[in-house]
Amino acid sequence: MKTTPVGLLVALLVVGALLTAGCTSTQSGTLPAAENGTESLLVYAGAGLKAPMQEIGQAFTQKHGTEVRYTFAGSGVLISQMNLTRKGDVFVPGSTVEYAAAEAQGLVAGSRLVAYHVPVIAVQKGNPRNIGSLRDLAQPNLKVALGDVNATAIGKSGAKMFRRLDITDAVEKNVVTRTPTISELTVYMTLGMADAAVLTLDQVDPAKLDAVPIPASENEVLIVPAGTTTFTANPGDADAFAAFVASDEGKAIFAKHGFPAYPDPQYANVTP
Image (cartoon, rainbow, N blue to C red; front, top):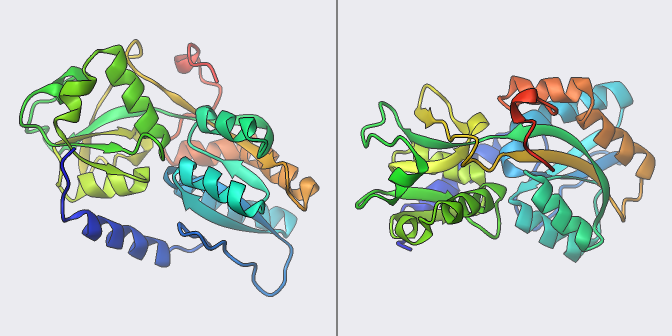
């Protein structure tokens, strides 16, 4: 895989965005602290879920009076952090695959299903490279940006799709970066540093990028789950928050931010 010196620029832009965010959040190894000693919940959430989860946290606090703090990162990083600290209350990753991995390690209990993460091919405005399918990502001299397979749900989805089409090696020759979060992947594309990327529909701002749909027969649609950790010190509020995320109100917030709510007949063939 090729490397690029502009990776640092992407990281700085993402960090800057986090510092100006309205809700308490972090993507580092340091967990966010509660303010003024108030009762609070710590939620581990996928970086690509930041917009709906912050709004859901604000709505939950208004209804229940419990502060919601977040740590946003790639799911692989979040699982490592939970293993290391054994602190926190709720886990909301980008897909049920990551949730199952955490459950297998004894970190979380049963989950509720919330919304769909629908992969698409993100291209520059006007689609100057005429990319019409996943197979086109294997054409020579194309710059392709992907999520890290070990850290992101979208990275895993892309890898599965490429294997299914038997184009893994050809696509890999075009990869110019693999980012640890989908948010950084979006920034990379928005800055015009790649011709194409596998993103999710909610990440594509139509004013900045175009989205090429992936046929259902080739796609690897993800389902966003929410559940409590096995080490939460506040199981009552933790379960109430997970239930709120998966409630009609929580799903409506996800839909507002571009995530089809679960269940949806259009994705009836998608299993958790």
